Each structure stands twice: as structure tokens, then as C-alpha cells.
Image 1 (cartoon, rainbow, N blue to C red):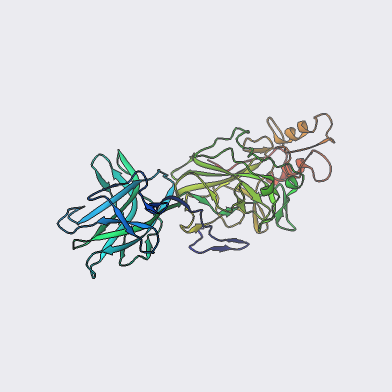
Image 2: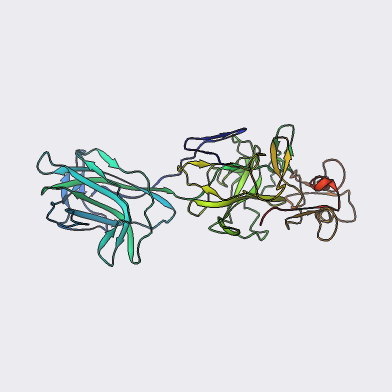
Length: 436
């Protein structure tokens, strides 16, 4: 079941509004310093050097560049002159270019001003378009620019940069000013929800934030310390007490969770990980409190996995399109009963909610109440072994219901949560995590 919208996604009990990724400026050129015409270091050009000209905004200076006409050859016979400036390479970014431009020459002639981020073939001395064709025709000094796009990978020896050139059928010049190159993430984005059966309250259909209330949630994600493998920049995420204690639309923070992307044709291969924070209504936010969880990997088709340190994980039944911010929204509502997951009975169904199975105190992907390496013994040992009525407080794997207390007997104990998660509540039964 795929759910997609370019504005928002609405499914029962869950609303996801697209998050606009942070846009940063990576290069600007105003062609002036302290009122004097200048060029930033790194510019190269064809034809005569740029010269000063009063900017069309009436302030400062712009660069006037000779354009020339059809007798000059440029990329298949087009007449043009160009300017190029290198940029730092970010393979996980979308780029945008804007500028001000105007024709300088016989009135009535137009100039097609091209500006784009692309790869410059330093071995050949020519730009390499790679199929890009974004441009704007400028007749006045109004700002003009293109939308964000991804420059393709360049050939060996090439340099990423911003190219500005113009084309006209007459001999004239152009003036340009206020060149701005921006970027935003071109990364796979998680947009979805999940629920943990351990702290789940069926009356409110939300999860308890008892760990947060007691100040037990660590500021550094716990999964790396547990030896869980990381990929594509995941691991070591940190948060702050302000983020943990904030009130969000989805409620308070419940605990750290883990998100995974796996290879589309082999879900045993881990491609990217992210540790994030889970809210009471099942929403997932970043360690910084943002609703847009990004992986350091390009968008594409992946299996999506949601995990918790003492619950069984769940994975999508098939690979899904994982888009970038602004590229449409695909939602992964693991807490919805109709959302298909890999394997059989991968989640605990409670009414209209699907929950991750609790009780994996011995985090081996198997829920066991009896026999070797079982989870019940882990709980008993944690409270002291010989005295089952003991309790301990803190942030522990054995705290199955995430209330901050490891408890073997009595009301609201962790042992019972484990037993109820077994098939038929039979002590000798086991439940195996449904991951390949």
C-alpha cells in the first residue's frame, strides 16, 4: 500500500506535511568590495576580461562581459562567451542558481543568459553539460534563476562549478550581477510512524514518556554502544535536554529508535542508518527536534526498517521509493494495521494499531521465556537474581515497558509483557524477528 502526495499525505490518525529542507548559500558574487569593482578568486572566462559597469539596480557595480555572435563556436556552433567559478562538491545536494542580467548593445536584440551548476572538464577545457539545459532569457535586470536540480557526476578530472554564459545572434555584450548559488539536501528522507508495545497505553492509544519524565533518556543514541552496525554516516547522534523535554505536536519524547534503509534487491545489505527520537503518537523526529529525518544517502528504492533496542524490528514488505525533501512524500506508517510488512505477524495488532513486539531484553531478535539465552532470565538477573521482588531503576534493556523500573514480579512488571508477546502466551513458545 503506497501513499503519496506532493502536498501532504493523510491517512487515518496520521498527517504528514512536507518539510522544506534547509537551504544554504554556497557562493555569492556581487562584483564589488567596498564600492570598488572586484572578482572573487577562482573565476575563469573566455574572451575579454569582465569590466566594471554600474549595476542595473543603481548601486554598486556589475560585470560587463562580451558575448559575440554566431561566428564564434561554442557547443555545436552557438556563439557565446562564458564565466566559470568552481564550487565545493556535495554529492548529496540539489543546486540552484540565480542572478541579475541585462543586455548591453543594440536595443531590440535579446540575450539568452544561461546559468547552471555543472562539471567543468579540466582535461578538455570545456564544460560538460551532462544533459542539463536549464536557462532563462533575460531582457532586463530582473532577477532570474532556475529551480533546484542535481548535477550529474562529472568525468575524471572535472571540476564542479557555476557556469554563466550568454547567446545572441548579434555582436553585443551582457551585464550580470548578484550571482547566488544555493543548495539543499538531496537525501533520502524518512516520513512515517511506529509504535512500541512496551510503553503503549490502549486507552489513549499513545505511548508513555516515563523515561523522559525521570530524565533517563541518554543524550547520545544507545545503539552504537550496543554494537549495532552503522552505515552512511549514521551513529553517534546526540540530542539536548531541551529537545527531549519539548512539547511537540506528536507529544513528548518516548525513547531513541533506529531507522534503516536496506538494498532494494537484497534486504540483507544495510545501506544507511539513522538514530532518531520517537514521540508519544508514533511520530519520529531527528535528534535536533526536526520532523525531517534525513539519511546520508541519495533518494531511491530501499527496504525501510524500524527498530527499538528491546523490541522486535519490522521491515516493509517490498522496496519503496524514498524521496528527498520537496520531492513528494512517501509515508511509512508502521503503526497502521494495513501497512504491509515483511514476514508473518511481524507486529502486534491491538485494535487499529500495529505495535512492535516487546520483550527482547537479550537483543538477539528472538523473544524467549524459557530455555537457553532467554529474555526472562535477563530480567531476573537484572533485579538481583536471588530476590525476584527486587527492582532497579534506570535506562536498561530489561525495562520492557519503558517505565524506568526493571521489575520481575508484582503489578506492571516487565516479565508479564514478555510472556504476553509470545504465541498463545505459551512460556515454551518463541517469537522470531521478521527480518531477512
